[in-house]
Length: 503
Image (cartoon, rainbow, N blue to C red; front, side, top):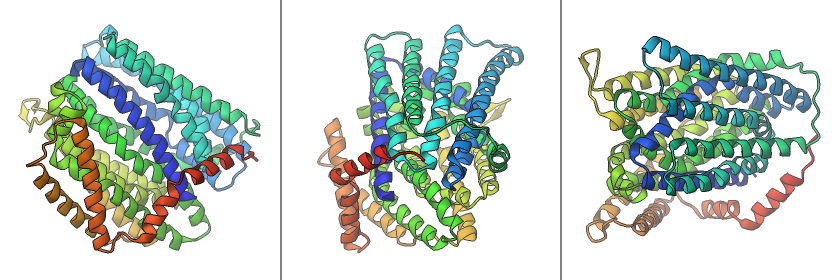
């Protein structure tokens, strides 16, 4: 069931990311890089402050619900907390805009202010929707969450296409985001209200605060770390370079959903296993998940590493050719993050948010230091490397590598989970696959979109054949994948979950 739930998340998130890429396609084709960059920069600005609407309470809600606490009390407590924090987020963002103008001596343009306010509204809708979706995640009701979140791109992307074709102002692009967020809130809360939930006097505030308090700082540090790259590129370079970087990052989001899917399922699952004292299964499922993620991700990364310029031009446009530098390095970060996600899930699942906080602080410290070294041309007259968007991607790789090894060391001490040495066979298979693709490129250059698809198919095929010859891919693996992706099995799972009555 875990495999099928994970696959459903992959399908939903991949569909969302695929639709998002369609939106990116229209924006890169019909607008100059500066316009897309301004959208990406403003989203990063608002998302940084939106961490205030979480402060670890989302994870606390999943934890308490998955542990079997009274669902009505959990939901009532979370509803009050979320409404309060979302209000604080809005106020904090507005005050920050005013302080920016006061202390910097520079004011945001009218168009930038409009974008900020619209994306604040977009965030508010998502924060309200999280009351429902986080509850679903805690109960491992995967279908309900995915039905909710898929509504955003289904509404937003057609609107973005229309706005882009007509080359309307960037503000209209922001309105498309707002309508998508509103739809998610309506759908998710409607599904929630159909359940047999009732509002009761909240009594779990202390319990929630106890779990959330140690990781409140994590939410803030994580938001800063996730958005600092784009904010600093925009500060030291221009919106165009933010566009190059964000286009690469958004494209790789198509594949990073694999790790998100597995982590979404493994957190509550590991939590239940830990509560039952079953660490043997935690170790076993961690290694299995890492192995399957590696099988999917490595052949994709191989293609990106070899042909970043060709991919950037094919996916975006000639004017986005400079996205090739960030694309190559960000693909390495993506691979490290995917392989590390399932290990990171263990830490909160065994009630050690303090360790997560330390790892996040490590990530933020390394990231900011590397960004300040690699991105700006100079700081107060001190010459830096000045690599711009590519420099930000390199900083990302260094940060991801640091967190990757640190997490492995921590998890080994917590649950005695060791890395799977057979993953090295995947690396060998990836290198051989890369050599094959390189030789093919001499007679079959990658020029059109169907060339890219062809290279992807060859990469996956060669990679899996090599794994099979190395006895790392077995018939049992093949049967497992086929059972997970079985349309009949997925249909029955969806029907059973959506018909399930909430207790």
